[in-house]
Amino acid sequence: MKTLRNFAISAAILFAVAPFMSLYAQGPLLKQIHFTINSSFALNNGRAVFPAGTYILHQVNQNDPNTFALHQDDLTHSPVAMVKTARVDFRHTNYPGEDAMMLANDEEATNALPIITGWNIAGDDGWEIIGTVPKKGYITESVSGMTSANYKAKKVHIVMTSSGF
Image (cartoon, rainbow, N blue to C red; front, side):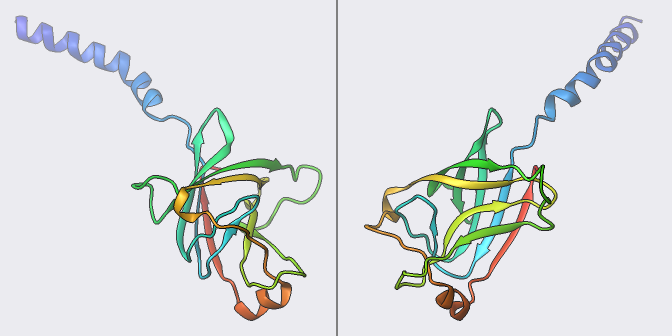
């Protein structure tokens, strides 16, 4: 009889607490941008060159929606750069139809290095990169954007997906 009573009390507590447990376990999603690029690249307002490959821009904190960490390959390693952004409000114009990375073109540049200046999210706002702090091994003296002619000749290809937006 005592075992049955303890079971009934445990079941009552479980049913009372269960709805709150599921709410507690599901916090807000942090935003992520996954992209693959076929060329070395730089980020706007930074002095670093990153090799071609797969990257993740991961929102660092829900309370600071404009700071992202750039991770190479996956989130198991420390970030290769920290990225500060400013939101681009499309509320009074047309929202973008697809996810896209924004690249800078510099008509006077002599190299063919794409510079990522931000990104747009389909049906949402965009983010403009206003500052980049790279990890030591990626810092270079100067970074200049690619020319339009080099962009077309090099055929820089970026595949991007987003989550949490």
